[in-house]
Amino acid sequence: MSASLIPAGITVATRYLDLAGVFSCALLGGAVARTAGLDLFGFLVVGILSGLGGGMIRDVLLQHGTPVALTDYAYLPTAVAGAVVVFLIKISEASWTRLFTALDAAVLGFWAVTGVNKTLAVGLGWLPAVLLGTVTAVGGGALRDVVLGRMPAVFGGNGLYATVAVVVAGATVVCAYLGVPAIGVALGITLALAFRLTAVRFGWNLPTSLDWQPRPPIPATLRHGTRTTARNGEEEQPHPRKETP
Image (tube, rainbow, N blue to C red; front, side, top):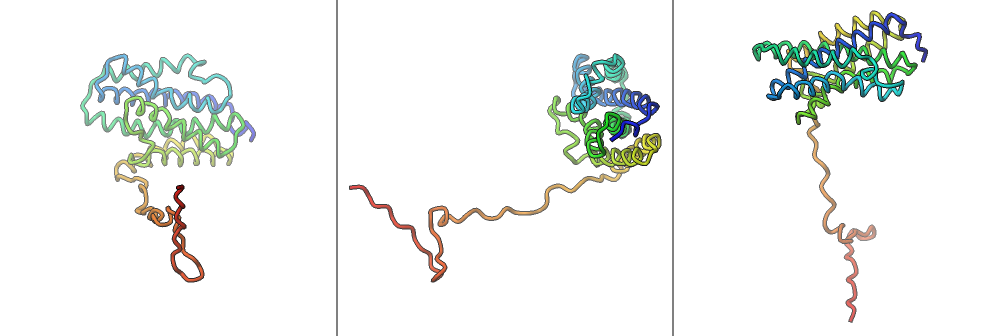
């Protein structure tokens, strides 16, 4: 895979999309910290984990140098700023709910697109690009939820959360292979907003486990050595052990 799939201009735009995702996800982390009743330090920790977690997982898996959050000094202040904004600004719970949903959809778009472009830019193929685009989109939120003892949204029941990331990553990859990565960026973000908000609005979710029952356990007679003979269809009892005098 050639890095020419992602031109220099898209690489620059990817950085700003990445930072937009950091800020937006730090806002989400701050909103969750407010719900949990954390103090300022808790806001900062949750905001930083939420804002930087997905990108750092992606960069570690890419093994293409030190994670960008540790080399580009814009990343940590951006995450801190997102958490502090939520700490300082108090709005109604209903407003936070609406804002949370919109930000969540935007983050999925920003980071799925960023993960795909960064993966293709280092020369990997379409499958790793879709995988790391999805990991980038859902990783920070999953870390945040685990730290706070919540069920990560990626595990389902949350409006096709991970599914949206996979679809956006796939669309971005297709556009990159067609030679129109700029369209892929715009399409990915638009698709994330439309798909995610529609899924939340109508309560779309993937099906849970199918209604099946495991096969009954092995009969006790077989466990103790009883078997059926093929000749006469009668059960043959195991020979009793001889007692040692």
